[in-house]
Image 1: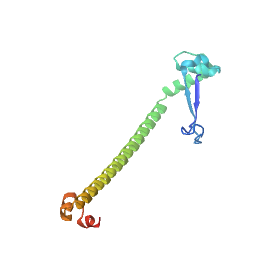
Image 2: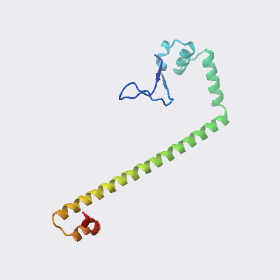
Image 3: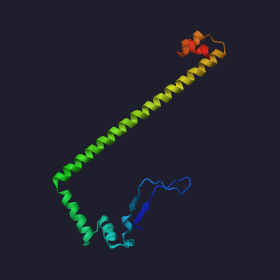
Image 4: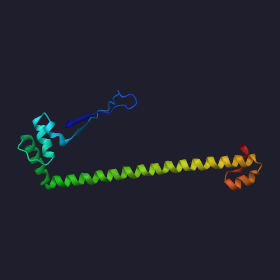
Length: 146
């Protein structure tokens, strides 16, 4: 088959469709000979590098050639690509910053939990609150409250 159509399906139950309005269509140009529609077959063959006299393909090729040689359209395309790249970069940068901040927060929480566990263990062994506070950096009043 030259064309495959996909919808988002829940993997857990195998039947719940995500009604988000998206449809993905995959085209396999290497199976052009199996296409029933003449325009589709000619288009798939064109994708594989075969010249075509098909009216649809000729129209498509003329449009592509026109756009390729139109400097204004090329400039607009390049501008859009640049803007999209900048947006992707900013999103990636913000995402990385958020991930690093979350990781740092988790590390700090883990350090605090470790310090608390150490302080509680030392307190249980009879080590003075002052020494525990000095060793862990936890305020003596907090250690005393445990």
